[in-house]
Image (cartoon, rainbow, N blue to C red; front, side, top):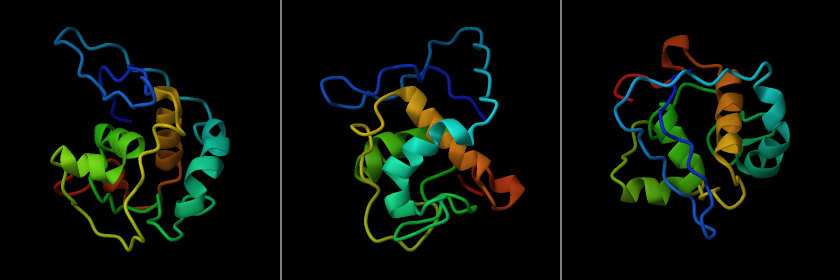
Length: 145
């Protein structure tokens, strides 16, 4: 999994999600070790925060599946982190545009008040990556992602 440096800021600050801040240019920090079973730690959070829209195992529901190779805004870690934390409206306000198309009922809501720590967001992203069923070359984005 690609690592994004400097995403250790707290997600909540007076009820607001704080944006990931790039680290100062220094020697790269060692990557955090991957959880031994990435899907298990996030299961409760996925069921609580994600499955209502994305289906029980992320296979789709009234919103896009989390398991295929369509990354609506991009498949890189930074974009996905921001999408989960801030939602699509904030992402678009920051200049992110759609790169893929899925049938959706509405925009992705900001989850920063439900998913309250960076670690919870990373566990959700690990769950998404571990349940990915799309083309292997597109697991972290495809084409112009």
